[in-house]
Amino acid sequence: MIIRKKLTIQFTSIFAILLLVFSLGVYYFTSLYRQSDFYERIRLRAYAAAHHVLDANELSDSTQHQNMIKYYHSLPYEAVRIYRSNGDRYFSDGDGELSIDQKLLEKVKRQKVVRYDVGVRQIVAVFYPDDEGDFIVLSSCIDVYSLRKLQHLKVLLIISFLVSMGIVIVAGWAFAKQAMRPIKKIVSEVEKINASGLNMRLSNADGKDEISHLAQIFNKMLDRLELAFEMQSTFVSNASHELRTPLTAMIGELEVALMKPRETKEYQRVLQSTLEDARLLAELSNGLLQIAQASLDSSKITQSYLRFDELVWMAREQALKRQPNARIDIDFANFPDDEDRLIIKGNEALLLIAVVNVLENAIKFSPQTRAITGFITVEKLDVSLKVKDQGVGIAQEDLKHVFVPFFRADNVRNITGHGIGLPLAERILKLHRGSIQIDSRINKGTEVTIKLPQAYMFIPNRV
Image 1 (cartoon, rainbow, N blue to C red):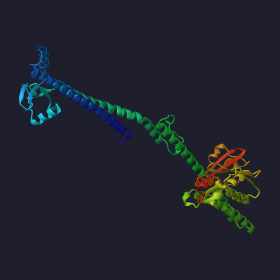
Image 2 (image 1 turned 60 degrees about the vertical axis):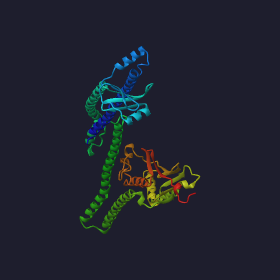
Image 3 (image 1 turned 90 degrees about the vertical axis):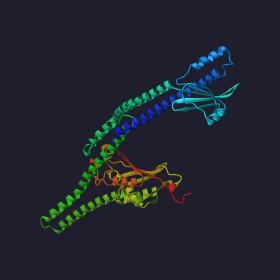
Image 4 (image 1 turned 45 degrees about the vertical axis):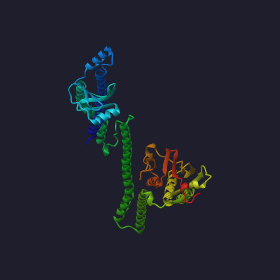
């Protein structure tokens, strides 16, 4: 069932229940009031009959006259019966089957006033003591006019209910249509978005209601999808270029070598060149394998407690072995009083690869000074390493692609590399619930900050 029909049915059902309860309440309390009011009038008629019949010889002429007026001012279909306390009839007036049995007689003596009805006829029995003895007065009437009005009220309420329900159904359908209009607009706009049109955005994202919030969330998702598609396209393009270059070189060298017989030294040169290209391909393959491994579930990777500063110094030594002409200075921005706050939990081999890649990247892109500086900082919940260089920098439009494997900015195409280091470092840090941030300016240098959560609070047997 479509939401519009559901809203209409729910809206109509709620209104119908409320209107039905209201109508039943009006009818019930009106009927209750009519019955109670008419019983009171019958009770007064019973006393008027008793005064007129039983007290006639005991009152003055004017009082008798007043009682006579009250008595003869009768109600519709009135019937009056007066019985002695032993059940003998003393007085009877009006048509109607009114009788008294021993059970009713005892009940009236005990309660003094008894009300009951027979069909539409309402009856009141009252106990009336007199000088001649105790009497039971039965007075009954039919509230013809009020019953007719009550019936008219019932018909009026039923008709009003049916008419109101018709109006509510139409209004509910229109209300549901109006309420669903923004959603239908969003659906129509979403249907137009495809892989080639990820730059489109939903238009209802400027308000403060739930629909606008949904549109904002969807637009943010489209931003992420567009970036992911763009990164995927960049990855495929750059990976194809990086893999094709050594393969093309190898094929070219071998084809030239096979064109005619050559001297031994020439063959050795060709083999050496081919070997270097093969090593380059192996290096690229290993980089892709490491990225894949760094994307695994962290629960599948062996982790242990490590000192972050020791890890950084180990990475420094490895980076200097690969880049002996470089200079790497590591300083503490704030050494903690509790050295355990330098402890992290992770896989030493993977984290070492991440830190080494960050250090080597900084050296690689500082071709003139080949000098970089690292600052270890202990924060409230994290430990961080900030690596600064004085290199060529990264353009702002290229910063969002630096974590795409094989991506290389235009201003560093002449520097040897494959664009795997930073993407691999990011995957490893995410695997350890860490983060990496880059701030860079062209010809001013780059600042890379890596953060990892402290683990000293979770060390077993820590006091």
